[in-house]
Structure formats: C-alpha cells, structure tokens
Length: 424
Ligand SMILES: [Zn+2]
Image (cartoon, rainbow, N blue to C red; front, top):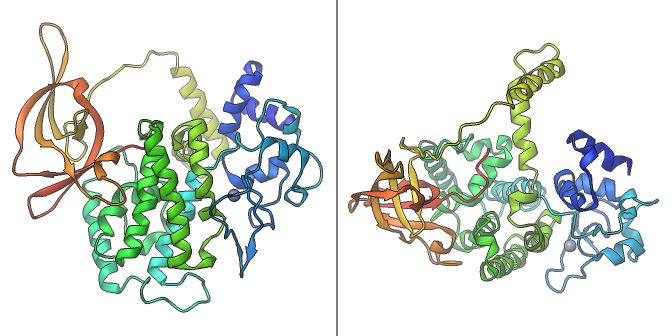
C-alpha cells in the first residue's frame, strides 16, 4: 500500500483517495509496461509467460516472440489472484491485491506511446530503411526502401513541415533522423503524415498493411470515433489483420511483445475510452514543461521548484475563456460537422446579439481520399478541389476539427482531421 500512498501523495490528493478513485490513479500511474511488471510482481514481457493480458507461452527464436494471434487465453482478475499461471509471477505478493475491487488485469492498461508509437511504428520505419527484419539477416530487397524512394519520402516530409498547424510542437523531419524522433513525432507519422508520404513508395502489400495499423489507431485515438461500436469492431479486426500479416510480410521474429500487445489494445479502449485517456503522453508532455523551467545548468531541481511555486501562486487568477480559432496559415484549416473542409479567414461577432461567426473559404463537402482499409471519410480524411472554393459566413459552432491541409499540383488537396489529444 505504501506505493499507492506514494503515488497519490505526489498528486497532492492523498486525503481525497477513495476506493472509487483507485482505477483513475492506476490509469495515471501505471501505463508503462516495465513499471506495471514491477508493481504487479510479474515477469517482464520477454519471459516465458510475459504478457500481462494473456497466458500464451512465448516462442524463443533469437528473441521472445508471441506467435498466437487468435483465441488468446486471456488472463482474468481471478486467475491472477490465484496465480494459476505460476511462472508469470515473481516471488511474493503485490500489495495491490489487497484492494478487492481492483481488477488486476483490466485496470492495468496498455500505453500506446511506448508500445505503439515508440514500439511498433519505429520498428516498422527501421525495417523499411534497413530492409532487415533481424539485425543479423541480409536486407530483404522487397522491404528495403531504395535510396531514390527514401529521398522522395524525405522531401515530402520536408514539405509537410510548413503545413502542420501550430498545435504540433514538433514538425515532421527526415527519416535519416529516425533514431532521434520523439514519441509525438512517431504518432504524427502513424496517424497523419505516414499515409501521405509513403503512398507509392513502399511496395503495395507493405503500404496496405501499414494502413491497417494507421486506420485502427486513428479510430482508437479519437474520443468520438472509438465510442462507436461498429468502428471499434473495425479497429479490432484491423489490428488482428495487421499482426497476422506482419508474420507473413516481416516473418515470425517480428511478433515481439509490442506488436502482440496490439491484440489487447481495443479491450482497454472499450473500458477506458480513447487512447489518450490512459497513455504516457501527458507525462512526456510535462517533461517538456519541466525542461523549459530549467534556465541554467546550476541547481536544476531548485529552479523547477521555484518556477512551480510561481505557477501555483498565479493559479488563483481566473483564466480567460476563449473560443477563438486561428485565422493564420497553416493553423486555420478546419472540418465542419457536415464534413465541409475550409480555411478560417476571420472570426466575427454579431454586434447585436454577440453571437460568434467565422468567415471562411469553403472547399465544399470533403470527398473520399482513399477507400482501403475503410472509407477515409470514416476517420475524417477528405479530398477537395482547391479551385472550387467559395466565401461563406458560418456560426462558429459549425466547426468541428482542426485539420492539416496538403495541396498538390493537380488542383486537389487532402484534409486530415486531427483527432488525438492536442495538448502536446
Ligand atoms: Zn497477450
């Protein structure tokens, strides 16, 4: 119990902890899988029975892999507490089992920042660059991006830099710098830029395969989309297909823990809502804030404490509520509730009743950008004609999502609705 008290104490809410707040606290404190294994007193992911969600035995082929894809032998709170799969547990008992209402499996969700973005997405890019699924293996000519195509992808990424709205703190950068990409850059690539820059560059089976992962995570990251049972079911099927095809395209060794954990991701979304509700991204974002508080190399901890106390003393002042949208390129691209794609030119207030309106350049109702593995409009990706815009004035509440607009020379543009939690 000490651990829990420590965690809640950090949040400054120790006196307010109740049984009902425990699931929330666990979401906050335990999404990282290495940390979860430690506090649950279970073996690490590479052990013989390393998955904390199912009890399949790993297959060691130079590394621990998870070959079973369907009919997974799921763990339950009951099997965990009875230690029915004894080899999964370390010696001793975790104090968390003293909490009767805590589900030792379901309430320890998967963190998509580490497992999907830093895990699967980065692994895929590295494989495409090297052509090697296994470090010791020879490059596979079908998988490896030839230099010409890699250059085209890099040039497409460079063009996107100027098109990403201000809500992205990090802009796309070259594949040559993949070792330095942060988790948020890998997320942007997976959700938005990857489907655009990889088109026609990867071999078709590999591109189509990547799109299953991208479409599934686009659904799971959006609070609205993931609340629709039909789309959630699609995400589940897409991830199952992605994992089974990964085995075909990249071989059995590709099925490491991070790839396997995709098969359990939808269960967590069903329970907790969109992926950003239980990811490590807020911690990562706060790391950035902490770094900014350090202005010199001396006494960094003291500097952080001083800045934090300054922030806390200003918290008493009321914040200004603002409904304003951006009217500055490239942050002024939006999609409305009735799927119109537009650029906001100006926000206006009705002088009589004070109602908010926006003057926009309307490109009309967005059309299908791609049709596989699903109609792109289902995940808010549209195609418009750029030479067919009209000026309109709409009520502000028509605007639904911020978007990335990517124009091409043929007079069309893609509008990609931004669906993840934007506080980067
Ligand atoms: Zn599993």
